[in-house]
Length: 111
Image (cartoon, rainbow, N blue to C red; front, side, top):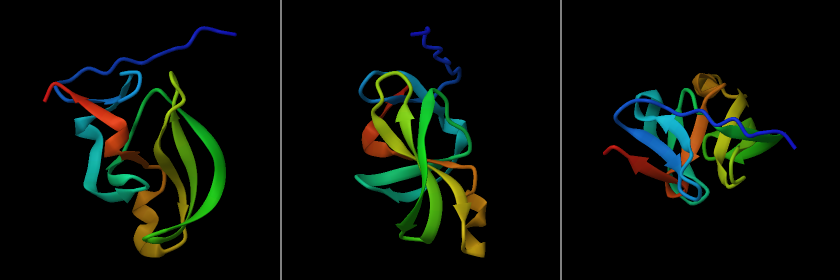
């Protein structure tokens, strides 16, 4: 088994995996805080780090049918949210390539 590469983020406000405290996203990458995850509130991010992707699947979400991948922490394998691969509704296309991180699965540093 190889060595795990963990990226460290710089900046005043960082989101980390609640389980293992590995950096996950920067506050500056938030697109919206007005999303719903499986376990409550969630944030939409442009970019995240230290994640691995699950298999692609079609999923019916509150905003319609999407093709998504679940996102896992690359360190502890805790599920953190999902990535939007494709949106079928034209009004939802802006989400493609972006990430949902569930607030309950994160902790804040530098706030």
